[in-house]
Every structure is written in C-alpha cells, then in structure tokens.
Length: 88
Image 1 (spheres, rainbow, N blue to C red):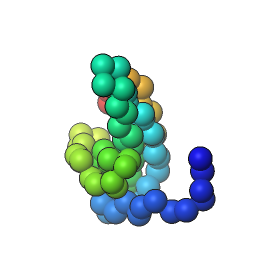
Image 2 (image 1 turned 135 degrees about the horizontal axis):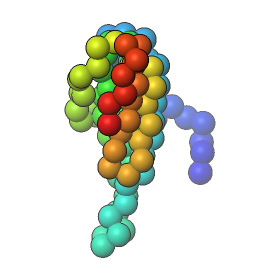
Image 3 (image 1 turned 30 degrees about the vertical axis):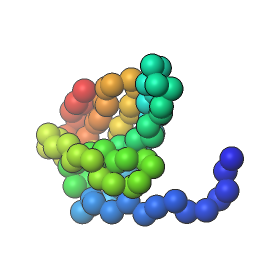
Image 4 (image 1 turned 180 degrees about the vertical axis):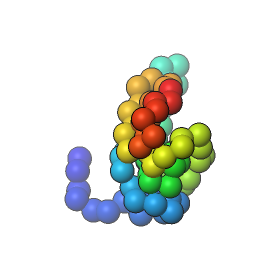
C-alpha cells in the first residue's frame, strides 16, 4: 500500500536530474523481487540505485551531453542525451 511517507533521499548526481526509471526484477525460482531504479542527469551520467535501501550501486558514464531521457525494460537501460545520441 502507498503510505505517502518519504522512503529515502538519493544523492549522487552533480547536475540537474532529468529522468527516473523504475524496475522490479523478480527471480522466479525463489520468488524474490528486487526493486531498482536508474536516474539520468545533466552531469552526463546515469546512476543505478537499490530501491529498497537507497544505496548507489553503479554510476554509468559514456554520454557526451547531459542525459535527458532514460527507459528500462528487462536487463536493458536506454538513455538519450543533449548531443543527440542514444546508448543501449
């Protein structure tokens, strides 16, 4: 259920936040799910977060401009930036 309470404040980017994508991954053998999210920023990076703990898991680099679009499906993250490139 949704309580409306703040769960965490995620800090790690040095630029404006431009996008967030949420993913619920599930292990069908153990029926255990893990919640993760990825954020996109003007600092030219994506950050992968543990959605349960708020812990930063990984910082992804490679864009030449600020990242202003991000989507997540399955095991793939797709992002786009201000220099007109898309990275999968």
